[in-house]
Length: 235
Image 1 (cartoon, rainbow, N blue to C red):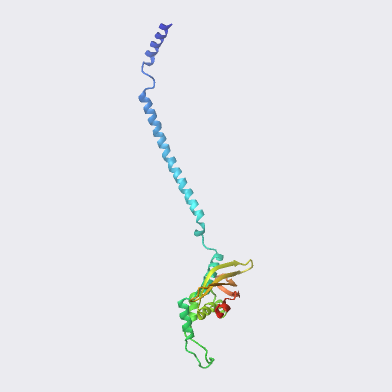
Image 2 (image 1 turned 30 degrees about the vertical axis):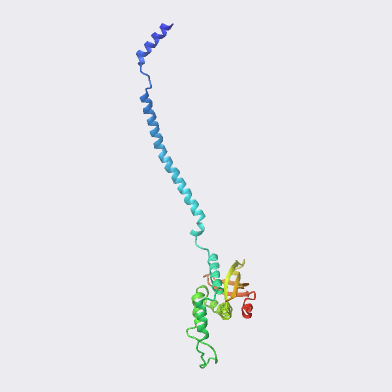
């Protein structure tokens, strides 16, 4: 039996040879080809992954910063206008404002024909120049005239005359649910007499109507929380 197996093996060796069918060098070549293909496929996949991550990051950035990329709505612009006017109305008086008041108070009296004796006039009017510079951009022409003739510069003038400093501590603006651009405002104002450590606060309230061009056409005061009276009395 053993001799038969040996004879069979010898016969097979003569047919296929005594060398192994898969040599070591063949294995090495095969593995090198496989590795090369893996690298060839890996590079595009890696680039695709990086591009995807980059795109996702950019979309996230746009989502987080979309508010800054969008134009402000008309309502936002109106609120900004109101904030600017109220801050300028209830903060100060600045040196520039005090100088304008002094120039207005020291203007030459005009007693000419058609003018009442003692009426102080100045050309150009220093206070009008001040309001044109700081308030005119935010009002209609008629709205600015009404503002000046009512409460416009009253708080700053009173503070200047009685030696107070005004500062806006808090400002709340609410758009009313009605036709037209109507806004109610509440301003918490601190007032402190020069040289005093005591600081008090008062709430100034009112309503503003803004036209379609973003200009204030009506400025109405509801109350000042006793601010003018307290400054007058030195409290």
